[in-house]
Length: 434
Image (tube, rainbow, N blue to C red):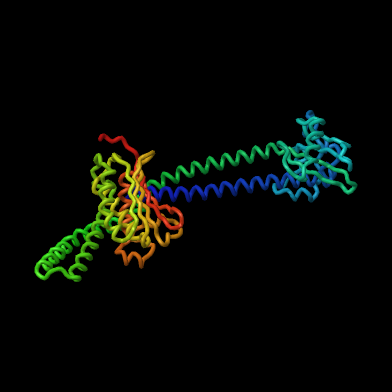
């Protein structure tokens, strides 16, 4: 139980942390990408607004920088107009020399009239024409084309200006940030896993202590109740010998039987909750167990006018505990008889294919809505009034699940149509010496 609680705590904590990290990484990178696109669009807008040139700059500055020019010989950058303030990173006078771009002009009939590739060294005029023609044919006026951000602008005279801005370095920076943030996230996740794992014991300690007290109380109370129940049962026998049977002694006997069954189930649950239940597994003929239990319930079903069908495959063996497997089958059949509809049907099936499967189904007036897994919760009763009539405590299916789990099996409730519920127990197929 302690290990299960620690495992659940660690998994829950790590999934929560993973979700937070994913959101943070996603938001940071989304903001960075949005900022990069916005900066590129602002720069393209500036160029488009000035017919493909930087505003307020002399023609020489719009040409490539001579490589042999000494720094002292370079022309001084003029005052940059207010348009540059639109850029979030406050680009300075070096922007015209850093930006790699080209543009192509089209007439109103979309024929090329001018190509400018002075500000890029990797694009030929033919490539520029192909890029621009392709961008012009697209429905969107802005977008990405390979490592370029493009913008299509239609002038007042009907002509077109198609601009391309190289953003390869920005894309590389964005990818670098993404990889770095993912790496940091993974490292943080690993570090938190170590911390959560180390402190998980202390975190679940109060819950473990509470469960241990509950289990100890159930065990002690169960053993304390056994003696008075045995005494009451013996006294009833004496009364019936002396005075004969009566409805009062029969009622007391039935209540003693109910209480004895409840104590038995509570003690079974308490034992199954232990880390290593004291259960000895042997080679068990499960087919024979299910046959014997089914036979014992057949008269009960017949007396209640219920159709009873049994289909059990012979010679199915399993490594398990005979007593608890008998109890599991009894609990499922008892539940089916108690909650089946009037004049309904009950079926028991045991087969062996990929797994050893025990199915107990019954018709019922109303199948609980929602998740049927809650039927296995302790003391849960879908129909409290029906449970009182049938004498149920809402603990039988919890015991059934505990027994199935102790045998490395699973149990689930499934709907079959609108009026039938089926409890399916699957056990792993194991190599058993017969």
